Image 1 (tube, rainbow, N blue to C red):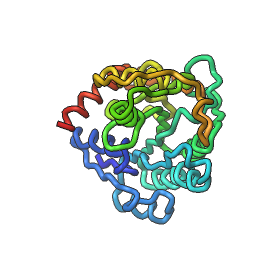
Image 2 (image 1 turned 180 degrees about the horizontal axis):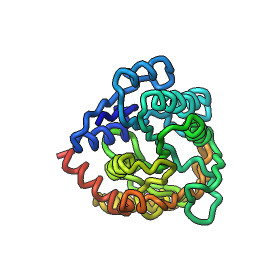
Image 3 (image 1 turned 90 degrees about the vertical axis):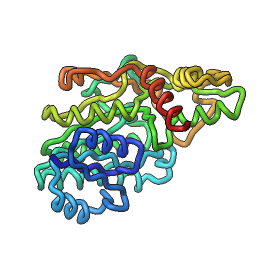
Length: 284
């Protein structure tokens, strides 16, 4: 089996490539310099040459605030790129795993969002990712749309690393307590994506660690688990205005992930502790 991973130098792309390498699969981990998914001719040429069985699209524009000023760039990467990949996958018979986001929802739901709840993004980033979903569905073929959220892990900028750095520099931090989602460890996510791609049960899925938290709760857990002394104080989103609006609730209901791959991902607290343990080993 041949697996092509786009965005392979990003936080998730690196982990997906490692996961498939551990499984003894032939992996083609391509960075943007090697495959620009917004270049249709290049996408077709490379996929025709490699002939992958599975393409995992980890290439994306992920700067949520930056997208408000770079709308066209966000839509090119997150919307048009997936369209080209879907077309090329249909042409060579590959299955496409398209990574999407919790930010396609407006955050007004009282409980977790289900896979067929109506999207209503409130920022450009979410709108661009929803465009990508629609592009993949419109082209058809064999595809998985895997929505995930609040990623952390090695080899990439993420909230957990930011909090650790700030907690080592300051005695007190303020973190918003009115945005809720599910922190997700890229190691756990990569394994689930590979299992999902093996299932042949094509369609839309929510793939996150289990449970939910606010950014404040995640920060407290991380600082405590790391043995740091900084105090964490809750605050409201309005106290730290950002260019892009954020949904107040973007928790994703995992059904029917367990029914398809046989398990739900571990709780986010366990995932965060495992990541901290791995970081400690890597930093020694």
